[in-house]
Image (tube, rainbow, N blue to C red; front, side, top):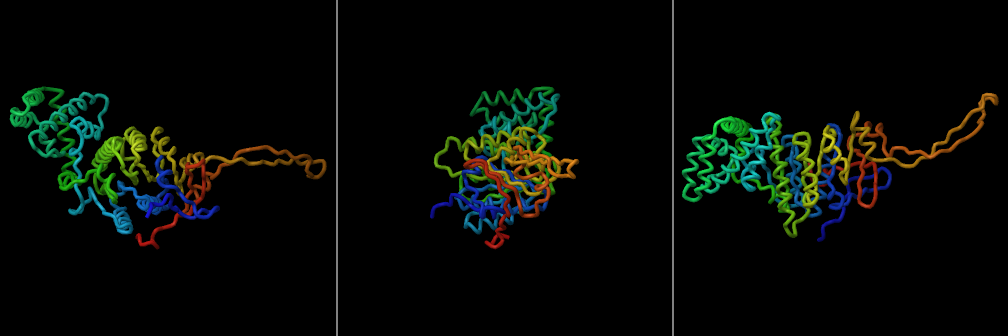
Length: 410
């Protein structure tokens, strides 16, 4: 059976079933916006359902701390596909090792970039990145499993000297470089200590067990195999830990996108970032959206509000499919502008007081009116959304999103 070219998001208020094409629409990504309780989760279900029916692997990064896991599992069952869970608190959940994939310099950049440094700390960032790159190279050569915990342990002068002894026979130059790193004074020693503390804080937090657990998830494989993968960012984790993991996930998704560029016969894939956009670095998010498009990975961002960062906001608003549930304040005005305007005719009549209010004259002028006003967006009932998509021109509709409950999805 051939995969469907389109799927019904719901019932249009004006033109019957509104068919949103997949993957043509989602090739330019999708934005789902709306207040809490406005219906974003049901809309996400519909898009994932359509993506799976079209044959796409789906990865859901759940910024709500696992609330979408049940839905993701049910959708996998409905489509008779494998289900993977990663970073969850259950012992049956897959682990996640961000140090497993990538060249040493990529691993170093991924880890160091997941932490913030003020301008005065730029030298510490550069020192830590150099040291981690060398350590990853040496640990792999020595057959040591590279994890955030083992790297934290290795960011110590005595550990560096011990590692140098282990690799000296295989690579004398690498051993010499390790000894040189171990003998540096400040600012290097301070940078090692600081990065060791940062990595140690994460591995001692709620993510610690998952970061050491095996087997671990490979995001590149999750975007290749036809399956449903759910990645949880536990709600009870500290804000700092969640932000670090969010930044690492963005880097891994970018790397997976790069790997797909040279690959052949890979299916279009869908990544859902639910309540996630505010957690990651805006610049990295913009890069992810750009790189993923070229790699045939459609990013679906679900959020309660538009990001403050101008570049990220612009990237999301330019998505090929934009679905807006009830929103308030400035977001309503912004989204109304995104839906555009349509021509209107304004008729004005002038009354003549001398003739007891009779019409003295009539004027007609062309004007523009919003396709969907900010007031309409602020008063949308739960489950109803304004939709704009760009496949063959600019198309706008008000849609009642159809829940999947009747089809066996809770």
